[in-house]
Amino acid sequence: MRLFVAVILPAGEVQRYQQELLAAVAGRDDAPRLIPPERWHITLAFLGEVDDARRSRLEPRIAAVAAGSPPLTLRLATAGTFPARSTPRVLWAGVDGDVGALLTLAAAVQSAAAATRIRVDRRRFTPHLTLGRWRAGDGASRGVVDPLSGYTGAPFEIRTMTLFRSHLGPKPWYEPVARWRLDAGSSQSGASARSARW
Ligand code: ATP
Ligand code: MG
Image (tube, rainbow, N blue to C red; front, top):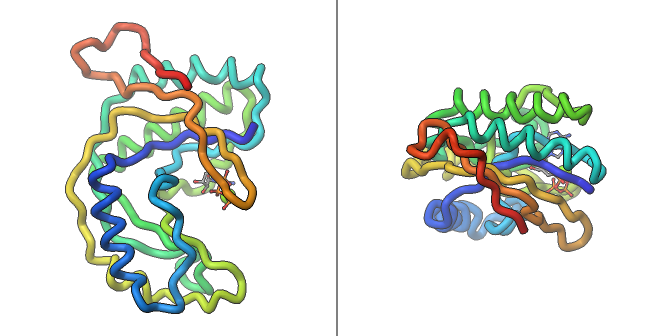
């Protein structure tokens, strides 16, 4: 199965930012195809195809990472495109706040994957929220970034991270298969990592 680890945002901030995004793209024919807000996430590690045996060795390692990691405070801020200069393919929102801790968390999850012999792509990890994509021939332009680049959202807390199974195809969706609390520093830390299952 195709897996990745990500954090998701509180519904209130998703709704607020969706309003900003819809206002920014309104009336533009150079805007990207938008990703529905129920799929919004910030990827920490893309694991690719993982079989059941490897997944069952991986999960306790990620649970241990979560148990030893503190909750994070983040905020949506700025926006941009990948690539930054030539024809854009992806529109993204940036994050600020505890970005150092977010990078540390991502590195720890990637190490957990590597320890399970899952090859992860560690190339420059830039935390971001993908908002939309342009396809070839879409008449892409970076202009849609301008109205979003000045946005600074309210701070929100990230208290969990989620292992998602990615279902590709005409109607792609992400199935949460395990979720762990970021538990360092909580009053109950020291208890075994709690995880919810679907
Ligand atoms: P699609 O590629 O069909 O648009 P998707 O990108 O939404 O679908 P996946 O390709 O399964 O779904 O990716 C899941 C998450 O992992 C996304 O956030 C994606 O940006 C990220 N991701 C995918 N491939 C890589 C990779 N090689 N390196 C880093 N992150 C990746
Ligand atoms: Mg992809």
